[in-house]
Image (tube, rainbow, N blue to C red; front, side):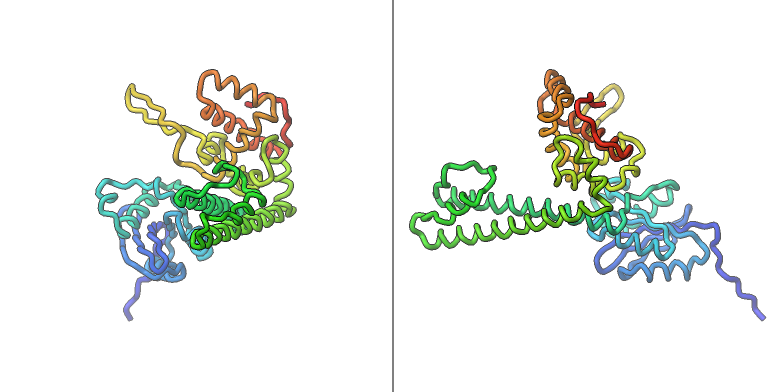
Length: 360
């Protein structure tokens, strides 16, 4: 009777680079030495696990894909099946000039599998719990509503200028639109043109709809952060002068677990309060504030910093000192770093902020 040798890859790690799309995944498999297989499969975590278990039983599986439109769902599905999965920032995956100029799914999957196999301690981007992820989604949804509302206002201003219509009271573009001002817009004669009148009414209805959605988002966020899970942390952030409720919610739900940042420099890098540098030999250049950032966090911190310098004498003194040697816009970035340091402190120490102390 012929003895059949069973496959056993115990002690081997199979690295799986995924280029994920809505319908299909490009899969590149390799071990520490060789590229083993490259294929396309339906977008299904179970099918990938079945293929790995059948062809490489007993091995340890490590997969990775670029964080993007699919979010954290694939990572959670693969982890539940026993496949270690890391999320990667696409900008951090090294690629040659040829890969960039002749980009395709096969090259992308291969780059990811090579990155997984070459770095044993490669760490994943932070994957939040479902509750925190959903809370952050709600907060970000409000920021999108703000953008939509601003876009509608700009369209109305453009319409008035293009049609040679005089805006009521010569108001400024960036001001808050009160009900009184909106009523004046609705009552505009539009040079006795029914077509222009109809166009203006449609644009105003679109704006009012967007503003109503923004109001609903704001109310939903206020209900969210008053839940027992989040309210104690919100109170710590709100103890810092200059930070309002909405900005505090943005800060909390974007940072989430403050202890995931090992150092304050790591936190500043995540927010985007560090410069881009270009050092080569004796040449050292500071290229200004980095473009790698959490947009929501950085905007909330800078906005709050302008209020903070008015309410906290210590911060005001710091700001004026910075302004003696740099532009005020650069000075406020420095204040934002101090503000971030205070947020970092109160969240780690669970201690409310104390006004009047010099920023560290």
